[in-house]
Amino acid sequence: MPRPRHFHPKPDPRAHEGLWLYGIHAVRAALANPRRKVRRAVLTQRAADEVGEKLLARVRHEIVDGEAVGRLLPQGAVHQGVALQCEHLPGRDLDEVLSATRRDAHADASAPIASRRIVVVLDQISDPQNTGAILRTAAAFGVSAVIVQDRHSPPESGTLAKAASGALDVVPYIHVVNIARALEQLGERGFWRIALAGDGDASLKEAMPEGDVALVLGSEGSGIRRLVRERCDAAAFIPIDHKMESLNVSNAAAVALYEFRRG
Image 1 (tube, rainbow, N blue to C red):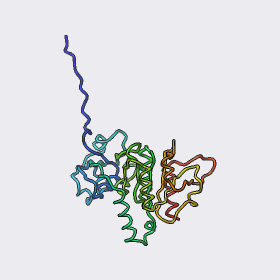
Image 2: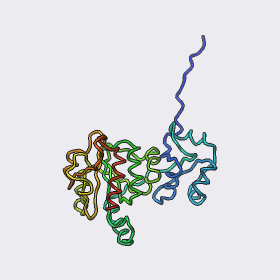
Image 3: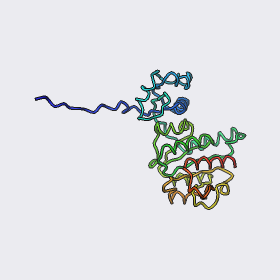
Image 4: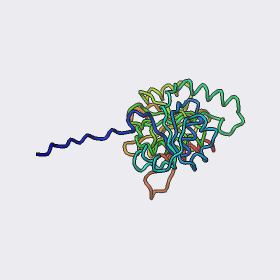
């Protein structure tokens, strides 16, 4: 009688390996960020040429083919031939970040994006694609920080970093325990807090302040929670055609941030 065969699951080679980032822009930004601790990079020769020798000099790296890169990452990851093993970014303190951006604004008051500080507050936006797109827009418009709650927000991941196209290592991504309390702290520091909502009392242009501003965005399903909205100074809407009920939250963030900078 043949002895029974026992099949043991193959260990996941990615287990306990830290964080894997992928994509040219995400990896270049991570390597350029002195706060990011990096372990190793695995990439094709073409990707290595795009990342550049100067950045790659910071990390141990090896040249492989595209399939070898893909085996290190989740199935379907659009890696562009490069993967970077690294540590999660250390946490940032909101007061420290705001103080630094105030110093930067005073140092170069002539810069068009230095005229006011902008903070984006995300209330229970859990989709890493949306959050990543908002981070990318935030970097483009010189936002001081993006604030999310510890719960109900996407953690730092390769998916988030790829969607942010490098912005995760550019814009401080700050986790807080309580969004409502964070808004109170922003108010104490002179920020005008605007909740972006379809049923707002005024258009975004009408509600725009002259000084520092915190833009609060909620999930597309439930919107901004009541206690969070009560901590805001105004609720504003983006005028759109009646044929469409609303905008995707990342699109709405882009419109609002452009309006703030244009104003």
